[in-house]
Amino acid sequence: MRYVNGNPILLDVHALGKSVPGPRRLFRSLNLQVGAGELIAIIGDSGVGKSTLLNILAGLDDADEGSVAINGTVLGALDDAARTRLRRERIGFVFQAFHILPYLTLRQNVALPLALVSPDAAAADTRATAMLEAVGLGDRGDGYARDLSGGELQRVAIARALVHRPALILADEPTGNLDPETAARVLKLFAEAVRENGAAGVMVTHSDASAAVADRVLTLSADGLAERRGR
Ligand SMILES: Nc1ncnc2c1ncn2[C@@H]1O[C@H](COP(=O)(O)OP(=O)(O)OP(=O)(O)O)[C@@H](O)[C@H]1O
Image (cartoon, rainbow, N blue to C red):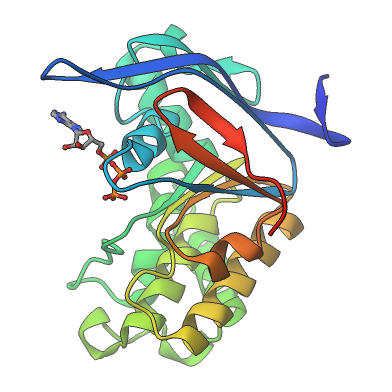
C-alpha cells in the first residue's frame, strides 16, 4: 500500500496528458495522488481543462497519455463494460447541473446508484432515506425535484453521489449558483462526507470559500497541477 500525507492512496494519476481538437493541448505531465479521507480542490482559469480532467478521472473521457488508477485499478486497462461497472460501484459524481431526474421522487433519485448495482430495492430505499436525513431532507423523500430550491437540489445531488459509499467522489462546482450561506452548509456536508466515508474527494471550483474547506488546493495549468501555497 502507498500513502500520501499518511493516508492510503485511493486516486493515483500519473503523467496525464490531454489535447482537444484544434489541436490544442490542455495539460500534460499531470500527477495527482489523493488519499483516503482527503479532499482536494482544483482551481484554474476558465477553459484550462478542469471539467475535462474530472471527466477523465470518472472514466467518462479518455486521456491521450498517462494513467488513472482508482484503488489500484487502472481505468485504461478496462473495457467499456468493466469501466462502467467501476464507475457505478466506486465513483460518486456531483455535476454542475445536478442531474436530478424530475419524474422520480427524491428518494428514488438518491437510491438510483444502488439500484444500478444491487437488486435489493428495500435496502436501497433504507439507505437513500438515511442519506436524505444526513443532508437535512429526511422529510422530503416522497417529494419531487420541481419543489426544491437550488440548495436543496444540490444536497440531493450530494446524497446521491455518496449513497453507494464510493471510493472516489468528484464534484464540479458543488456550490455554483448557491447563496453564500447555503453554499457554506453544502460544503461542510460534502467535506464531512468525504472524511467520514474515508473516500478521496476531488472538487473543481472557482470559489475561495470552497477551496478553503479542502485539505490541499491545486492549480491546474497547461503544465499540470501545482500545489498552491498559503491561503
Ligand atoms: N471534446 C472537445 N472538443 C473540443 N474542445 C473541447 C472538448 N472538450 C473540451 N474542449 C475545450 O477544452 C477547454 C477546456 O474545457 P473545460 O470545460 O475542461 O474547462 P474548465 O477549466 O472546466 O473551464 P470552466 O472553468 O470555464 O468551466 C475548453 O476550451 C473547451 O472548449
